Length: 327
Picture 1 (tube, rainbow, N blue to C red):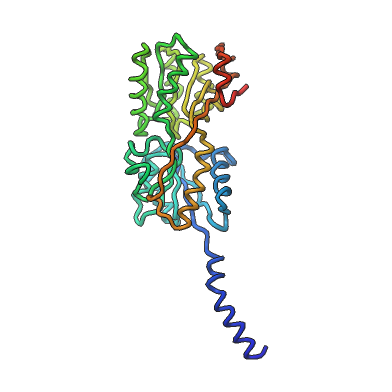
Picture 2 (cartoon, one colour):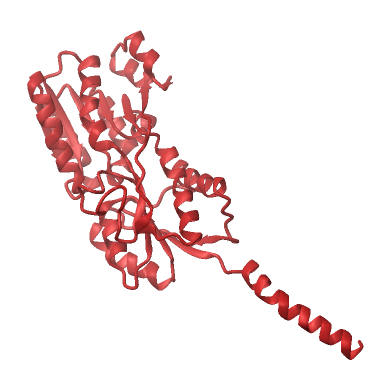
């Protein structure tokens, strides 16, 4: 090669190298903190998050990689330890679905961006300053469950008009759950319905809980949404049917598992929105400056197969209002 040609080639390479470096920029590392047990492969919620990433033009391996997800298995005391593990893996973003996970991620130093998914009342729980200006390097999606929980009482009264005792399963370690129980109790009292709350602190307590419920003889059960109880959907549905108790929830997971009814925002739509926040952060936005979004629509799901097993007739007008009927 002639010396002049070599110099031209070298200069051209020097000019292109910044562009090549930009094109070959290493993907960021994303972590996930969950309170439940690890989900099965290709679960619906994980698939919804992956779909949201693709909808925002994010390609795994090119734009991001996922660090091995961390799950506490129901022991919230492990969140700080697991958050530190993710930090040591140089994650830039932590996605989490429970208040304890958010707090553990927020306390990391140096800070990382935190994306909440389907969070119950994040302002009331003290996780962010406001929906419009969350701060604390945190953003994501809220659930509207604090509004939907008392609304479900109307469906209980419509399907079980003689109901006078309503059992409520909730996670006392989730600060939003006891608040929703209190709101539900206040809403139920004028209708002559007594709310019997049952705190579920461990999956091992579930059978004992239903044994106690059998003694109390409630007319229906309402489940307060929480990642830990969501893990127990199949067991709760089976026990409720065995005890002939219609079960209502603000989480679609339960009605798919066999409970009678759910009324909530679309969890899959909410989870798909995670990709939008990741894209904005990758483009240079500060997580704490991105408004937290609330769902704009609610969906009613009815498990007609469960209704038949319980000997409950669902009126045709209510079935017509349902977004989906499981038969």
